[in-house]
Length: 616
Image (cartoon, rainbow, N blue to C red; front, side):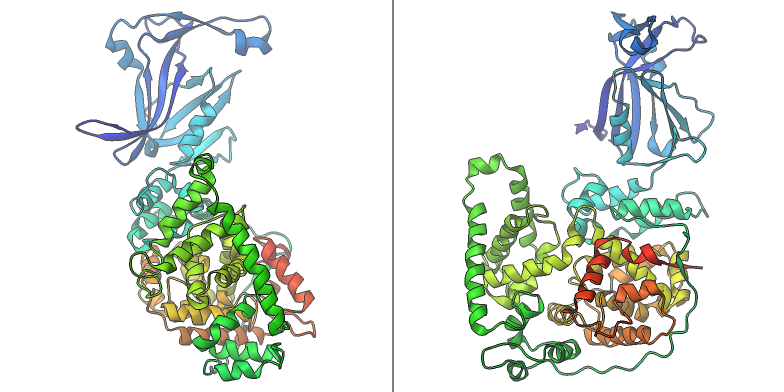
């Protein structure tokens, strides 16, 4: 960081030995002499600026020519000193411009790379910059942190420049303590906080960035897809219909069936489903009861272990005790791995240091208003920390990503036991793993699938969202990332999660929960003619105002309505796991269903490969 009394700026990129080749028209300049200078990209006054200045007293290149052209790169130049007589010559060659003023960069090769800059103001002509000593790739990589560079349709060597993510990066940086990462790095390292921590504060930045700065302009779909690919890393949007793609037009789904819900499963009811040795019987009926009413809190500690897969449904009490003993030993062996690392060892293990720092930071701000975690030196916080650190030993590849503490907190609250909470969390993470991977494959899959469902349910609403640049559904990002954890009260989160863990009445029921919420809000959004930023703000402000029972009623009704449709698009059938197979499609023990589900989840466009849904 460089500062003075009048301004502060940060040097993003700096490279010495970048040359200008004077033309023969430049008076008083030997055409065989090349002007050496320093190229910088600086972050100054909320603007990214490219600067080139002649280096005083630096070497000037004198051109030579070899007889073998393939050796020109080595033999083409020799160096000699030529002192600069005054500041006038330095200022004569110096130039600077903001990335916002830059229209394109053309990359050429003549044994070395040189760049030709074209500004939006066509009257300004800049000299080409020659990288005889390398550095052009690094410079362009630095520019890409603040601008989108895309190949011109007419000329592959020409990179067209747009700078939407500057506003995005700046706005998100204002929400965080650390300003040292670019937007994309922040999203990969901290998808929850970066993207969602203060969505209502950045809607105008997003709106301006995605709409474009010129009045009455609309960005083309392919550019919108590129921009959203930056906001959500790994998000690829197919803009073209391909052969064999299924086209969804208006489909009459028929009336939405009325559904009913019931009281939570009580201790007595839960006990009636166990035989004398403790095996759970009539599992489909029990799951149906849990789906319809949830669990009373006294049952959750035991039932969640079955719902998450920690306990097999057909295990006896003695078998479960043996399993817990084995899992307890395994847990503490993993915990010892990080507990026994000395300070000296940790100094040489940057990854472990980063995990520890991130976990400590997150634990201290997770559900601190809940009595289980409130106050200073709360033992619940110690358990959160230890379980998350141990998970880093359990899954080295994933480690810890922000947002995972939100998934653990309710589980630990219910289990009240370190070992049981860890294993239940580990099984839950098996379901949620792709949400937190670097490429965020799970998020990409779910956003595309949700779009397909919304197009089917209400094409008019979907078209309205697209007309407001909201068809990518990024306002649902937080819902999907941590399963509505920050949208509902703590007790409602417990109820929603246990209902979803039954895997009834279809696959991906959480997407229908999204549809149910949007179904309740669509009338207000369209009647009030909400634009991009108003939609984003409105959805964000629904947090803690949602009625979970109303949402579950509507989501189940939507599921039954879709399932009853005779001409259901294959893409939607795949998303929800509907099948014509006579076996019960809801039975998770069905091996056919399990393999189908794995295929759907393994590919970000798994449901699109065969017959994706596009609006005609």
